[in-house]
Amino acid sequence: MFGPASPDTISSPVIQMYMDARGQQYPTAANRERTFLSIIYRWGKARGFVSIGDPTKAMKPLKEKQGVRYVEDSEYLAFYTWLESRGHTAYAAAIEISYLYDARQQDVLALKRQDITDED
Image (cartoon, rainbow, N blue to C red):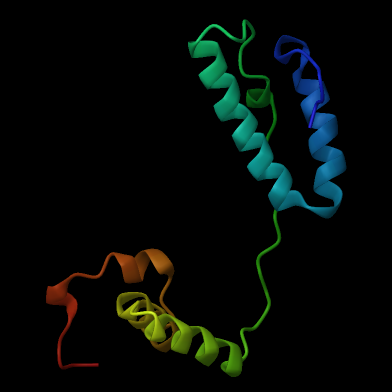
């Protein structure tokens, strides 16, 4: 990303310029890379490798577009079949519940045994 530059010389404006350029085509990737840089700076600061504070704190994440691609029935069935054929029945059940009830991932993962009833 920043080549042979010393970590102490990478400033917020430099990272912002990178984010702006990278974010034109890949805003999600730019945000993930900003997060990764923040983790690296905190780790380096705690261990004495970096003397400056986290330069990513000064910038806001870029706006990301929601995924709008519809998963075709054949794609869903292929993935479901692939999961079951490898013994991943819990994952297959989770995607089926999510699909049938239009449930978010976190809602499906939060389900408990007592949530299972005969009622629809």
